[in-house]
Image 1 (cartoon, rainbow over the protein chains, first blue to last red):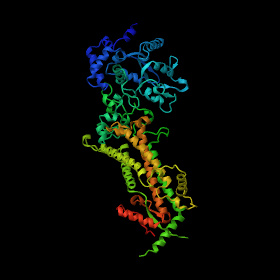
Image 2: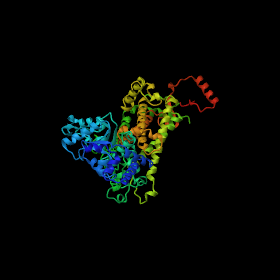
Image 3: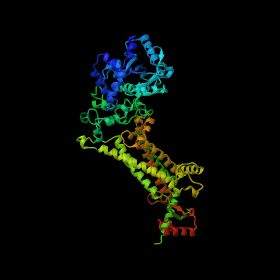
Image 4: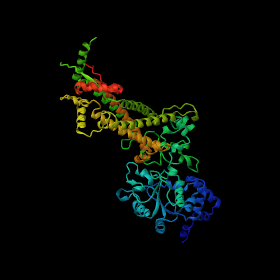
Length: 374
Length: 259
């Protein structure tokens, strides 16, 4: 009974009930407003929303995954872990974090889904295997495909949290032995918000849920289904090392003087120029750092199919399906060589096979040359 | 050996607009390939300067993008000219949609590529403008040029403040992200380089075999055509020249002294 009562609380009540001060709450609201990319005047509106609106129930499904996304989520510094998991959003089912287990857990999920039919947000972590009837991921004896379809039926929106549920991730990387697919390959009739990353930035989920509470709609998505506020820019375009890039100052190897000086990691295969994420602006671990800041090139973990676009520390990736060593430049050189070689062979052959024609031309020209007027 | 010397006449084949297009393409292509490879793999110029005082890589990118816009504008102009220009510039040359086109392609493949003997020796088989195979290859290159342009614009879209490149953001979505898009852009560069090698070689080949100004035609605009292929109605011809002279228009192609 207590659980159901809790679910009827507003965001604000749940936070205060947990022992946080109103000051904490206001700080959180201000932070989230900025994070969602809203202007300062929206703080009041967000505060009001959280004071008056009922918490939005969230069901969190785990399929083929490493739980790294959950790990990233509970390590969120803004707001504190407990705020997010237990208060800010009402997390009704997440088999990793909830206290209940077995039939109790499944029962709680079924109850919540029934009670909040059409209102809850479904978070999916991990890809969904489809090969051989989906047997490669089963929970409580049911396949991931089956569970996903059931949970998605009553969802208001689906949040594909992490690269696996957004793109397929490492499971779907070549040769994809279990036939893994992302959420949007199975569910077609629900709004799907992709929050890719390996792991994604945890505040993005809180931001999306609060945006939904505030406006009653999902945030604006880009052409690939990612919320624009968080994935509108390339890491490269918000990177603090960008001046080194434009100045042409690059680290050539990891142990070099240039690497120590913090030069651009472009030549060490940094995927910043092709990766959309907000690492450069929000940072990780409470904004302390992000990979590039720690001297490590971006591997493009929030991009589709990033596993198959290796090696990570080289500018040119392999061509999928053409062997490990086949880079574009190697193939290009072969094509160019073949063109030049073909031309050379053709030139020699021309002199052999068209000899008669050439000789005739020359003979004609010589006659004319000898009969010039002057 | 039976030797005959033929009479040739000068025919204005490539108009100024076509030649201008050709050489502007050459120039921008050279700039784009060089800057493109620098962008793909910048040389190690780790000179001991502060980033504040240096911007050379930024300028390389600026030159690359500027040259790309020139190439795109140039290409759009050429498409316009495919409808406005003379018979050799017309779009109908470039798409093999008739039996005649395919017959010419077969002829060129046989005689010029496989170097087989031409038994018929038909004059009409020698193309005055593009032969159908070459023209078709330019058509395919145009398609690749457009693919190159839209992949490039798509990569530029997010950092550009202009609506034009932003229009092509969907290309990266289509290819499943910037990684693949950049890759396609890079591979196409090699195809253009291979095309240049083959194209230049075949121009030289035709000039060598036919000796009728194949190479210089892209400078002067004129090619030499056997006199018997030109209508010999001198009276009409002279009248027309007089008309043109009276109008004060450009020099007519009246050279008749190639014997």
